[in-house]
Image (tube, rainbow, N blue to C red; front, side, top):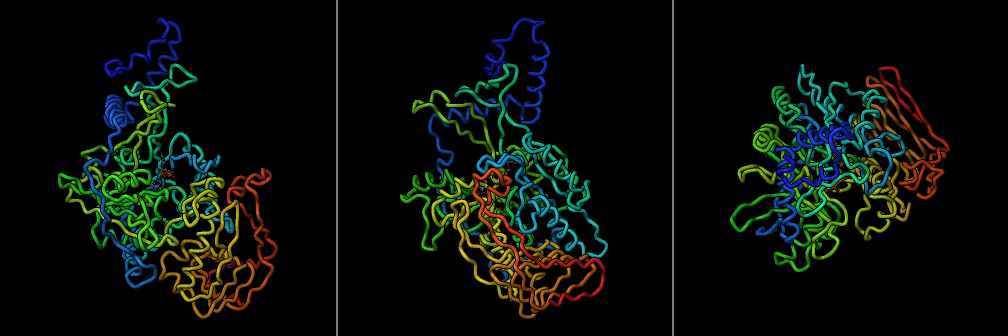
Length: 581
Ligand code: UGB
């Protein structure tokens, strides 16, 4: 098979039979794995690569013949009646959902040594992203089941890992008892890397350190579709009556603020595909959701990656390319790669494609003749390209939400973040954490509490707003209505304060907080928090990212808390309690 596909070079250096035979067997083991993990096998991979490399060399634009225009979608306003009713519809529906986290990426842009889902989402509680995601899913499960007598569903949670993240992800789950989720609810699907390509003829590259091994690199998050298809999980979910599959990325600490209402949109609009989006600044490094109309009449609503949107616009009569409009934002909403797919049509589509997703190749050529590569390349694919193969009858929509509510990923290292043009988001560990406090502060404000204005600090060269450090466990404030019901009377929180709400039935009733307060309560305890809490609190200290005496998690955010004084109360017994300070 390899010889037929022009891969003779892989064997040219092989010594005669009897020499290195075990290594040769190892080579074929790897070939077998590469063959079975790609839809259509290695022959398809090599043929696809030849085609895409030829297009790349010829400078062919994948969007040739397409004209972009601004698509129509759902625009939500946090906290209004429509938002609240969509959240209720989403919570009701979530018992029929399954969640899929793509966490196979190394996070090269962030440069963090560990896995990204193990990073603290915020350092007031120190809870990591994975813990927050699992607690959010469990809270949604509980809230959804409560609406239906006798519903005991366990929402499935799939994590896609890769060789780079698999062992550490399993270790994180096992050493923390799956953060309270039943281990049987969690399924790990490991993506395989794909073969590297050495030249324009798609000759496979050998590993520079091992001539019996083909060099491999990640294929991208688009692998999630073929893995789900081949795992048999989709059919299993269908037989259990499930209706929705929700995909999300590794480090967006705000994501679950958006899930109930977005799922509500999918359910009420009957969307087969619903992409979550935010207002996007022109040139921001997130894809733009675009309507593409082909000269032959075909149309699709699809993410166009940030590096392709600008040339596409320029080539189709928009001389300014990817530019902000009068709103101060690009007219193309930003894709945050959180997708909600309707399970039935998804399965039907995957039966046709087996999960293969439209691919691309991005070789770095040595010069303009495009005859040779600086280093080997490979085919890549993205999960948001799933709609590309859908028929025009498919209902493909999107939902735009406020950025402060829905999106604050941790992708960039401090040095790169500091270079982000002013006004564009940093997407760093610093901004990711500060975004949690800002969102929680704004949500509490909307619920009627008085929250002090933020002050501006500079950490690791990034100017950020520092709001009171307010956090709560997902079971406290899953939806805006939950929060509204728990904020009663006149409560106020000063800028230097930190508040941790850890329990389901904790009510803020005329709390005046100036300092640090941590309230922990078991589920059956109903706690009224009132009165004036004043203490020295937690002081924010700067940390330089080059200071290796600090932990990497701390250095990349550029600050830490000095815990000078706090009030921490634990309610471990059921019943009514009052914290009247
Ligand atoms: N991932 C995998 O699971 N496997 C892989 O092989 C690669 C990644 P990045 P990217 O939200 O700002 C995406 O690297 O791909 C996981 C969208 O394409 O963080 O540059 C990885 O673990 C873009 O349109 O992002 O850009 C992580 O969870 C825009 O929405 C996820 O895939 C952008 O995200 C994303 O990987 C964004």
